[in-house]
Image 1 (cartoon, rainbow, N blue to C red):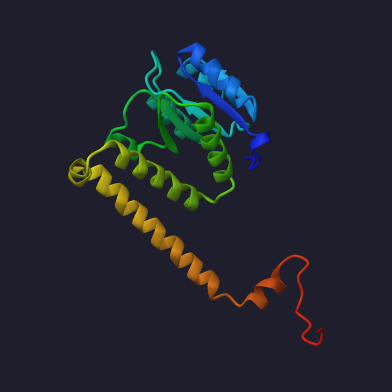
Image 2 (cartoon, helix red, strand yellow):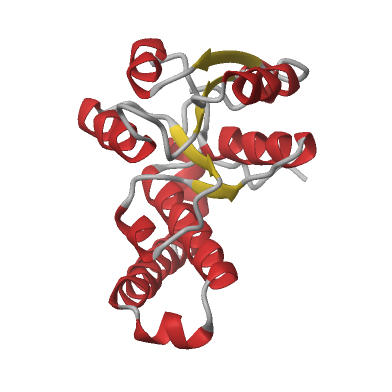
Length: 199
């Protein structure tokens, strides 16, 4: 997957053709845009070149939720951003999405989101998962009251998952910090022992 915004391919999926075309017009200014006007067409357009999918949630036929399930089953490595008029509910905790934007959205918001997703493509799976959880947490905290969050089993599960992955990442960093960097350097391709006589 690409890590450069100008090389990115963005698939825009919305049954409102004028809206999909508008997003594509915006995206074309900084990346390659493809459009699909329903869920089935989205899956036809999706291939390994697509880096980011901007996906409407409420569509006739195959819904955005169903598209997410199909993408997950097919194993595509694509960042999925819901762009929808549907307010987020706690069900998004279990959805394989990377961000959730509530319409209306503007060009700077679309560009910033796509850029963030493209950068994230260069992260390893664990770090991508952390940011996926963080985005869901932020989305829910903006949409729900503190009482609703406290009462939600899904939200509490999300918080636990995030805590776990942050502990794992912290542990990995600590292990790396304890590494003998001279040995690590020597083992790198083209690396060699440091000559302590050179000053």
